Image (tube, rainbow, N blue to C red):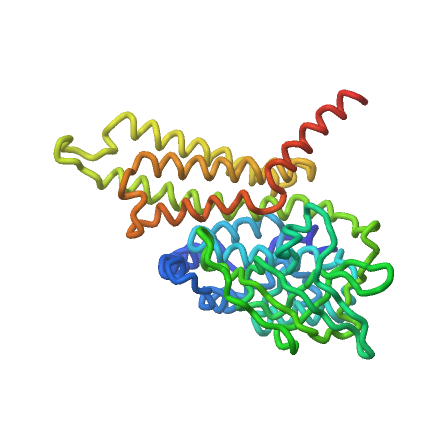
Length: 386
């Protein structure tokens, strides 16, 4: 049975008891990591301690083979505390969950990567975006080049927005070969490979703790068996239908969770705020009651969409729409709180402005709004033509 079809994790791990603890622990350091743009190494040490870094990996390699609803619960709880941690964790979960369908990964390589996560807390992510190319989801050949050597390959290039870079043990670097007819694919690189270095360029508005720096490869040696079946650009690897649901659901859950944290802060703010001219809490005013109702309505829509998709009630074609709708609802919910809270909501002493900066990052992730909406429209017209 593949990881994507597996049952939930063993009942001996009481997630309902553990996850609130993780949320609180990660939230305690979130403000400082945001201010410093520092990477939350301690969060991943705790996740490793709780045996959660291989949650979605195949059981035969020591993973927990969790299903999507269970994984969604974990990602949401982590994101409620510190969303950048949840983003790095989501990349790990997506890789492990799709491992059996990944081209070029022998069983030995699969076992090596998963056992490294289980035993040592090793993290993995794909490095694909480049300064000139942008996101490869829009097409184009990478400038990063893998050159043939006597022992395998030599990798040179620059990757930007390399999420989790300070803590990654393994990187799947998207590159083209230097052959007369170039092939394109991933090359598995270990953090200790010579010729790999990090430039700390990440100074973003949101998700400041994600460590999404530039990673530079200067003739980094790559073993022959770490070339993950590069293919001609005209024959890309077919998409994994299951990942068409897993990826948008888990990504959207990060921003829904940030919006829920914003909602909770705002509700407490409204209850505690007692203007002298009112002589009572703002929570007694109908306009604030209605506003919180609007926010809760948006978040209820998100919960229904995420749960429905995770439980298989929505098929893969709806994955992109779920991600788009959940992200926009999350942004709208936090914007309502920002508008109503005035100066306190924009003060750096309060977390609301941080939650707002974080939810805005949801629009950046693939699939992006224009692609999702155009695809939905094309599908509607195609259905009429049948």
